[in-house]
Image (tube, rainbow, N blue to C red; front, side, top):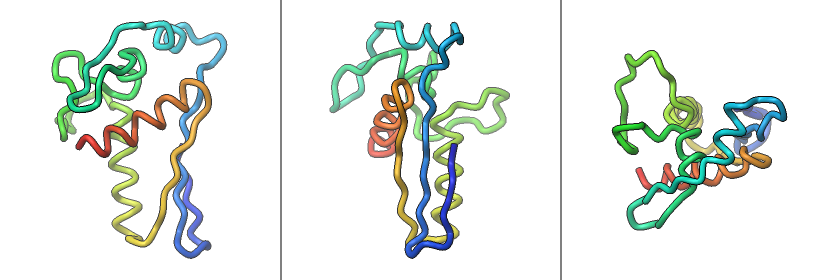
Amino acid sequence: MIVQDTKSEPNLIVVAFRGTTPFDAEQWKTDVDISWYDLPNVGKVHGGFMKALGLLEKGGWPKEIDESSQHRYAYYTIREELRAMLRENEDAKFILTGHSLGGALAILFVSMLIFH
């Protein structure tokens, strides 16, 4: 979820990642996926969390992806929304937050921003 407070100075954008839903098998599969992804100059990162954020099965983490694809990857979609909001107000600040799986995704999201 992305929300923006346009009345504060500077504007504040909050990006919140949801945690694991109790009865969602796909999300639990993400949590227990103990594979590792080697992120250059960082180290090994939980593969399930990376896949949930948008790690491409055969492409790793390209800086840009083909926008015509039917599949929307969380990282690229959120990054584009955030870019658009920041273009409208360059002084805006943003906060990333999340709980459980969402907390992991929030940390990895900013890591991928730095990576790119």
